[in-house]
Length: 344
Figure 1: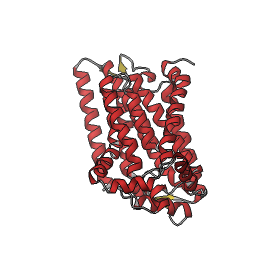
Figure 2: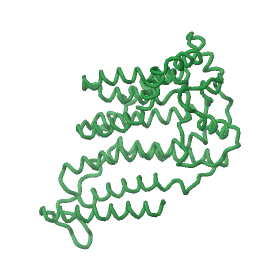
Figure 3: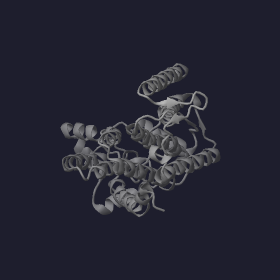
Figure 4: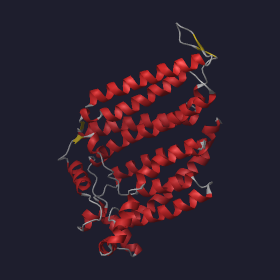
């Protein structure tokens, strides 16, 4: 299936590039037949995403990749490469489209398309690097932090098993919690799309920056504070099936599982909750748009509750996401914003 997919992607890209070049020539653009240089000259790379902040995001990706290679090598983990092709095809397609927008420059409006594509590529690349790295972090074999996380909840006076029992006793609430919990991925995708369509360039770059910082920090925390999550620690049945996730956590932690499949990846981080961090980032991204902002506050307050109601997280997991996001915001204001504006 992988080879036909790659062929299809290649054909579509070649067709798109050919038709785009014909359209530009018909509109009066000129190209050197030998060097393929365009007149007027191509835009500066910074206008297409490779500004100072964009370069930082790529450096973070490369750094994460190198750490991941080191973890996999030390733990003797392997990747089932036949499962990587779909991700590789998507990333490759994005690179080829961006290159086409650079080598065949069109209208200035298309420069923004290339910039959005660059930001999206950086986020997708980081996801494909860091999600597999979870297994390397678990393979370090650091003792589970569940007893400490459970003590944190006890200190707060909240029992996740009791909350989960109440949820099971109210089927309507259980369904609402499950639906709200699964809005996480659509929210992340729609945030990039909406900000891009609205041409909220600064907010889009800030969102990408926070995504990188928070995801890197949560994966780093997994290596230091691995956990089997509240349901497995307490032994209750969560509202969302966590069987596969818990099996992967235990398998890679104790060394009985050593092969990572890209078609079987799962979110394994307990502390801090990236679900909660992502919800906060999405809400923050629309803070200047009152209607959307208020709607997201309501929705993501429900998402925060759902992480505990469904038994997916300890309460301290959710609370820990707040200082994480706050630190990322402070870091962006100190350095990231200056990089985007071109200041050194």
